[in-house]
Length: 461
Image 1 (tube, helix red, strand yellow):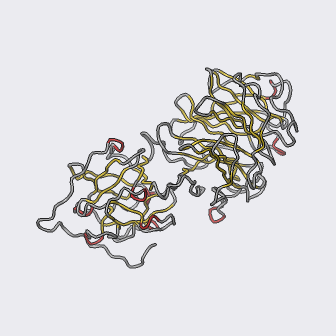
Image 2: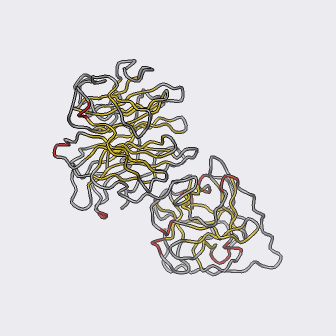
Image 3: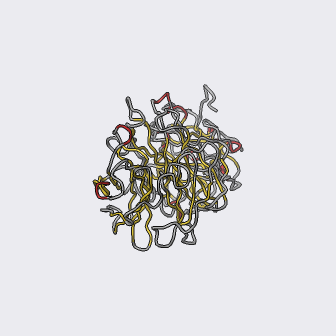
């Protein structure tokens, strides 16, 4: 944690001191014009200047990833593959205090002098992560003792390759990573966002909100190349054109398969399926009847989610009060199996399933969308059919009353293509004065600890 009164002293290289040579990092091609967030692999937290201080000697720590500029760093070239790490908010650089070469030497920020204890190399490890080595000492940038606590100290330590010495470089604004979302990401009242990466863009399909008793009748689509700037594609499905229901258009999901975009939606508390040749629609009802009827399996048949496993098998998840999963037929318009009940502890609604490193994650919401305590938890399993066990450390997303953020729930997850980089879309009460029918869509970064558990997502404004 921060130690008040810490003072840094920049020391020149002693005569005869041998410095290590940097190894090029093909997975971390540095753009010296860009800003990066550095996320630790072992902890999921970001390199951060404590409390946004601009003073020489301010401690460098880890903190939950956010959009704050004291978590944004620029690689300033010192030549020959060495860089200074410049903090965006202060213009100062990451510095090993007093030029120490010892294990445990503290990392602080200091005025840029281009001294060797301010120079770092970037070296590939695995899976898109890098180690960052100090030129003077040859030691690695390290989260002390692998702590997962906000404010844990960042030090240098002998390079062991441990996950608390591995960092992911997340470019802010462009490149392989998307930009930093500005919440809310969509204008106006929307809820229940389903986020997907389709046809080279990110897409959000939400519930149209702002109606008493959730009585909206249309679905819209929004797309973005970077998670920051969103294009409204207008109404993609109007229940006026669905002959079996004209009311309560809720919580859609979408999947691309067999050259067709399949759009699953809730209407009249039943689940329908529509199709289109483009993610922008328009979608037309594929069945002329519900795929799953009201109370067919003993609960509200709402909140569909479709997951396609690596072997090509598609699964439909749904339910309020109890969670169900069934295998979809190859036609995508029928259930191939009777549903299996997979309800984890605390489950209310809003199933969303994804797979990472062989583990199946079931995201879901607890409480009631009208409650400020609406929140997101998750369970894990070894099969898409479960069983799913609620994970320790839940909820993964919940309200932040100090920031006026309430009712955070009904989430979905998207992965940046080709990267172990993930984002969580969700809704919250409109700020100010929102409630369970005046909600807005937000996106925040979601990270994982070394054991695969999801780190707490801190909602941002």
